[in-house]
Length: 131
Image: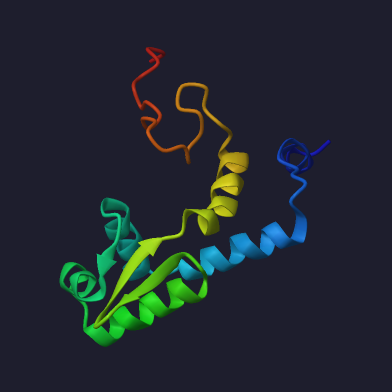
């Protein structure tokens, strides 16, 4: 069996094409550094008003609006209107298919419970002592 076939056999899931479409949609939405920065900002806060995002990201309001539109269309971000402003928050349910795929690719680490589990430390990069 080839290495590729072994890898595919180890990481086969039952989710199928619907899950693949969901992962691809999220990946497209995250395919710009400004949108990743917006997600990081929203991770730090429960919700955020659009003008706060503009101030934090440092891009023009129209550019931030375009990026938020892409994230909303993909379902990654939810916009709730509180006149006259819009409050944005992350939609973790929409990010779950990507998290499952990343865990399948990288494998859950026994010490951390996987790469996508909140509240767990990052894998250690300490030397194994085998120089």
